[in-house]
Length: 73
Image (cartoon, rainbow, N blue to C red; front, side, top):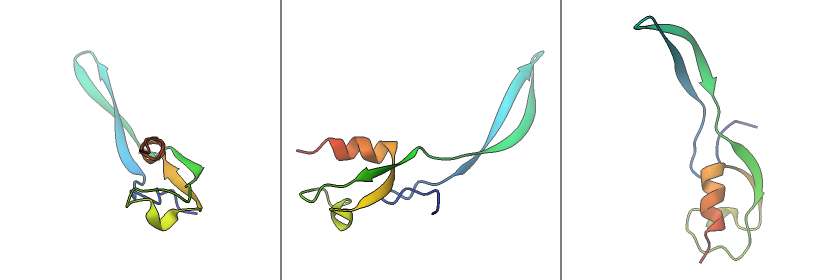
C-alpha cells in the first residue's frame, strides 16, 4: 500500500532540518516526512463530490480529509 491519501493525493515530502548555531545555520540531514494517514469508513449517504466514488468503502485518508469528511451538512 502506498503512503498516499486516496482523496487528495497528499504524499511524502523531503524536508531539511536546520539548526542555528552561533548566528549561522547548520544544515543537517534531509528527512522524508509522511502524511498522517488513517483508515476511515466513508458513509454511503455522502454528498461531497470528492468522496462520492468512495461511498461505502474503507480507505486511507489524511487527517485533513477526515476532518472535512466529518463536516457533513
